[in-house]
Image (tube, rainbow, N blue to C red):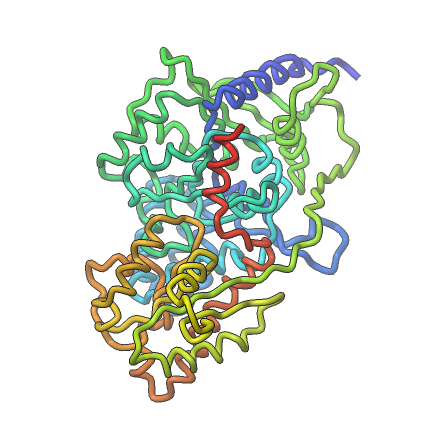
Length: 484
């Protein structure tokens, strides 16, 4: 067999990327195709028959439309338009129409979760390899949580997560690693960008200016895009970052759009180095590339050796640990009876493993304040039971202060009594019941509590599956990096 003409070029590129990683100057930009590496197990032993999230942004939109039929007006016409067009502006117009309808019907977050298989799919091998690689930061353009989940499984640490609305880049940079969700994600409904998914359409703001300064010091590796997708170029143009003169380098790893003889081909797309891999059902060449990137490069190891037919890269993540998920309910004195009723529903959740529901009623006599502080510090999920009196209480102010200082806890406000949350910090969080109708306004409060538990169950299941029992992982990560 003739020598692969791209072998030496790719070795050089791998070394360049690893040098940037070693210098803590390489950022991963992740797209839809990377999301599609997650999968749902089935009875078949053939990985090619697994179910995956959609591979392309256009496919995400199609699945969202199918999920909304027949209630979405013009759904058949919109699907036909998508099938007949690859124009990005047309995709954005379709996305805008879908978003308006979903927002009006309060279903945007729910539909995205279902389309991306967020509470069903397992992280794929590509996510594991990426989590093993010391990128300075992870920028995700899709709405999933698979990179964070893999990072948790591989390193036992929660990856600090930020959104455009968080604003201050200096806050991001104080962490040794972080993920920036450029278009939001399914765990933060207010962060999601569907209609302005293209960076060039976003309004300029101090956030984008600060992000530009940060990226001027960074090289970028883009994975999870088609060759025709321009997210990396759009991002650089949006931030007015020159692609030459700063010493930074930019790489895109994409599936080949044609049949190619060699596993990889290397070329240029303007100032971006383009690495095209031979596409098969399991994207095994991408797995080979990421596997080699995640470990020290050795000259004797040749990435481009011809793989055996149907090579399938698998990663054994080990059996998931059974952990205890701690829930803490915060309420005022007059709502203790409702709290106890709610706690009884929570204890009956059919989540795997164990959950521990805590509140002031579970405290032993003596040193109550210290025990409450301990409960909050250990909590994986905090459930403030909202009423107008609660919002005015010192307990509420203290809880607000505690959760604002932590990214390792999930806070889900519960509408216990009717109130207006406008301009309150809790207004930016996911709230329950799902219809935002206060528990005391339901004809049967037990049905309201069941609704809340139904929404909480997949969140708790996911924490169980990922083994998320360490509640101070951000602090632990900072301490370990300082002691290194």
